[in-house]
Image 1 (tube, rainbow, N blue to C red):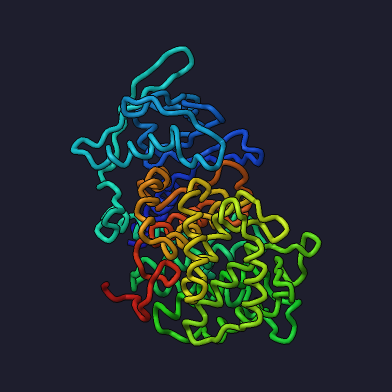
Image 2: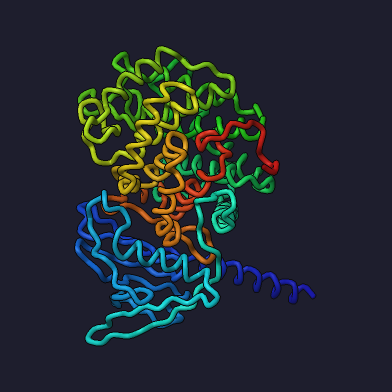
Length: 478
């Protein structure tokens, strides 16, 4: 009997290992200069590569046992035609967004998956010959954002991401980063926000474990009397955002003290000029980093909703620096007041628009920031080396500051959502056209699920950063 039990245990262990291995991870090679752009091929479970001017997708990797391999797609193949159509050329220019092969493939996968016969046809070039492949797809409805609350595909996709995040959360409460150091704190904050937004009471223990992790690893090191010590501002702001949304969602004030500590530390680190840096000191000869300021503003705005008053001096000083960073040509926020013309606008502009709308301050400015994101939404994935935060804050900014244009922008981004969608294991990381080194630091599988999950959650109207106004909503039907 004991031998039989051990045999069963061994089989279950092996099966669980195979299940874990079955989640496809795209083989993405970073290109800081933009010489190539690697990206996932969605439910096909493969990786593609494009260079400037390409109309054909070069297949860089094919997952074992996936739809692409089963249909005969091989590494080195070049996808020439998709569903009978030849794609437009790919451009490395950020303003072109997903135009070209990515848009055609993503749109085709979305539509073909919803058809009575879910099959997509690809014509590929293999060395000197051309082949026609028919690939069976998992059946699913199409995305729809004209009536976002009635889109089952979006809801199911978000739920799948949330389930996957619960499955891969580590015992200590964190989600695995790409490297050591403090990347796990920042990553964990966003993964926790996705679980909150999915609104499944069964996931509340996972949210709490994530909060306990960031508390131990980051917040507990804050000394109210010594602002030069303690966690980096990236962490502190993300922790504040998570704790603020958690209290607003659940009504649980257990971590209100930690929320105050985060917000007060950020306020102490704002200089008289309004600049902020990675930590206490201000980098770039005192120029600072606006991307830190705007996340601090969002943490302060959420904390105010929880009952912690905003430090008006810190807000005023920081807002002054943010305002000076406005690029008059684009209407978006640049790197700093010294470099307002930076092209990677999404994270800074979106987070500030969101913060202002949550706080109910300077709404006209918030609306104008959101409108710039609508006009330039092709840049959403371009956020220095961290395309994930461009997506997370860019979509929240549009949802908050330009809600009428939000469905239209979301429809444009359906190919992104589809190419990120995996048949099992949630979402694959789909980064920008250039440097994704910062996202690799955060951990591509973890932050990939977090960024796609937050985009999907932006349609739910639950989190305050996505336009929610109702407190204590977690675990309750809308």
